[in-house]
Length: 301
Image (cartoon, rainbow, N blue to C red):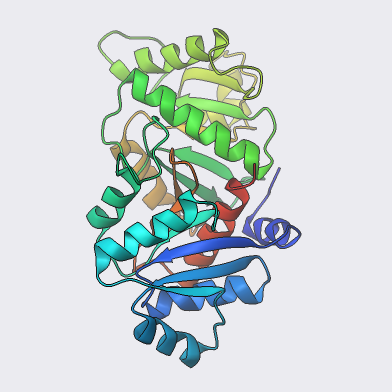
């Protein structure tokens, strides 16, 4: 169990370095985060793009990449960065100065991408003041209104990632507004469906978890709320993973934590053959560094 991002960094530094392939890497702010990860000893960067532009930034900030792969234009840079991951030259893919749609097309390319057959989903991880461990949440950034079958992929993606990170038999909350299955509220029906899916053994013995749903936020995180509602919960106050009913709920909750509670956080994309760092230019250096560390841990086999 990781309590905070300091422990994430401590853990990733105790492992052999990971190779990160950066598509369209001529982005100074991004490469400064890569340099920090490299200086901390857990990243060996492979940078893809215009060698002159990328090399100039590296020289300016003192970054010594493992390699610089020449690529002309966004699509070729993404293709080359994806190829490095697909062929085993890197374990993590990272977005540089490239349009998100171009980046995602490269990942999802049927012939040369990183498809697994599962849905791609966003995993956001929060270090919330007042809670004793990190909370792993999905999906708050890719799938707008996933149906039950898509939520099964979202659940499998996050269980695979958290297992690699080191979380054993996590406690999962299929979050809704209440604990009753109501046919008029699809999220409650889907939450019950996820519980049935896990109980059926469809995930296999390698991905154990304790899942409850439908379950409201207060019951998932506050044993007093569970007791007051007379709910016998095995996860209350110890929830590790939250599956959101839809992207809007995840986005609103995440941003409220970040802006009002000053949560530290990081995010990566799951469901591809390897962890993918999407990121935003608006992300702080700390978010970028935490996301790189998280992706590296999730890349462990």
